[in-house]
Figure 1 (cartoon, rainbow, N blue to C red):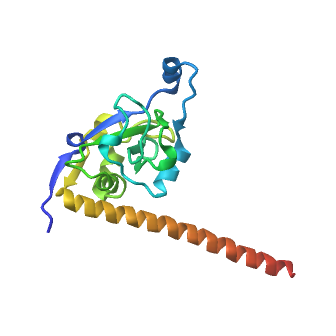
Figure 2 (cartoon, rainbow, N blue to C red):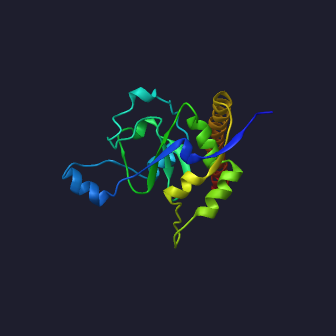
Figure 3 (cartoon, rainbow, N blue to C red):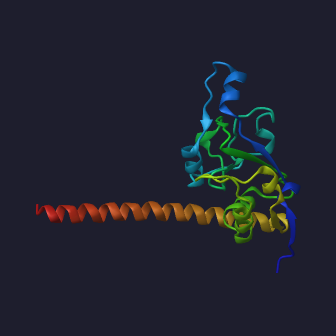
Length: 195
């Protein structure tokens, strides 16, 4: 049995909100800014291989550009993912929040498991949702108050690796299911044409 302790996310995580595009336009002038958007998030979430880079290789902290392996939360979906190769250098808009983790205490993939799949954390997120209309958000303060189970780092890495492999397998199975459906439909259509 694993000895676990429960603590608030704010003890391990710093939340860095995305920038307001209007304010960014004023700050950077005519420079074209390539924003991290919903399709970028979905591509990363659907797990094209992500390699976690060494923390020392990341860009300066005041630089707003994303690095491979950065952890990002979609504020509208309340899901987290790691930035993949195709989205390096993009800038977060207000729709996303970057997570800076204390890697000595909390593994990135374990954080993804907790934030996306752990039932107790999902219930806590649901209680904190605020706003009106179709898009509800959780304030950053409330995200920091979410209580998570903390196990030894080696156990976190094992759990995180299992979670990441499960998602990759699930993504492949979904692609295969789509291909099988397309194949079956094309055979049925050809049969109905009578050719």
